[in-house]
Image (cartoon, helix red, strand yellow):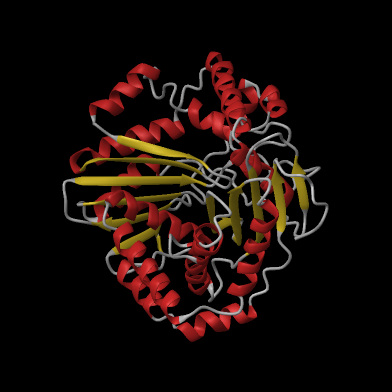
Length: 421
C-alpha cells in the first residue's frame, strides 16, 4: 500500500487495486463512511443521458443473494443513515451508524457496488421515475434557468463516448428512451477501485479500517473511469420566453481552480460578494434597492476548473436594473474589499471549516472532497491556519489581477434585450 500525504491524525493509503482509503480516528459511539466512484452523469453514454442516476437507484434492488426488500432490511437492522447521489463527475454512497456495525455496513456496500442483482424488470420503473423528475425540473423556472445556463456554458459534445456536462443527472427524455437493461449493466461494469475514494471517520484504529477495506474491496476490479473533457464557452446570451410575473437571471463566469494559490482568497472574495445578509449582493440588490426577492452567488467546480454562478429573481419591470447592479457589483469586487468586509468573510470561512468538521458526517465528506480536489487531506487546524494567514492585501492583490472574462447571461420571463452583459 502506498502512503499519500495526510495530516498526523489521518491515515491515507492506496490499496494495490487503486482504491484510496482515508481513515480518521475520532472518539465516539458512531462512524461515518463515504465512498466516491469517479463515474457521474458526465460519463453517461452519448445519447443515453440519465444512465448514471438510473444505475445508482438500480443498485439498491437487491445484491449478493438478497432481494430488494431483504437488502433494505439488512441496512435497516443496523439503523444506518444512508445518503449519496450522482454528480457530474462521481457517484457517492454514504452511511453512518454505530461503531460496532462498521464491518457489516462496509460489507453491505461492497455487495451493493460489486454484486448487485440489477433486475431487468426494474429498469422501466426507474426510467419512469426519472421522467417524473425531469417534469418537475421543467415546472420550476429557477431549475429551467439553471439547466439552460449549464447547457450554454458547457455544450454537449457532438461526438465521442460521453454525454458531457450539459444535462441534469436525471438525463433527457430522448436519452432515457435509449437506455436498456443491457446498456445500463454495461455502464455499471465500469465501476471499480481505480480513482475511487473511501473515507471513514470512526473510533477504530486506522489499521483496523484499512484491514476492513482490504477485506471487502481489496479484490475489486480496477474499473474503467477517466476524466471527461470540459469545454467552457464564455460571453453567451440567451433568453427563455415565458409569461410570468417573475423574471429570473443567471450569470456564469470563470473563477479560480482548486490547484491555484489564490483558491482561498477567491472564496473569501465570494464571501464578501454573496456570503449572507451582510454581503454586497444582498445589500445592493435587495436591501437598498428592493430589486429582487432572491439573490446570491457561489462557486462551482467541474473537471478541476472553478466557476462562479450568480442568480437573481426579480420582476419584469426591474429586471434590467437588477442585471445592471449585478454586473456593477462584480466589477466593484475586482477593485478590492474593505477591512470590515474582509474580517467578516474570513471569520465566516473559519467558522465553516471548524463547525463543518464537528459532525462525523461533515468531516468524512470533507476528507473525500479534499482528496478529490487537492489529492491530499487538510486537517482542521491546517485549514484554519491557512485561512487566518490570508491578509486584506493578498485578497485585494488577487482581485486586482483576476480576469473572470465575459460572463454568460440567461434570462427567463423577460422581454429579450438582445444585448450582451
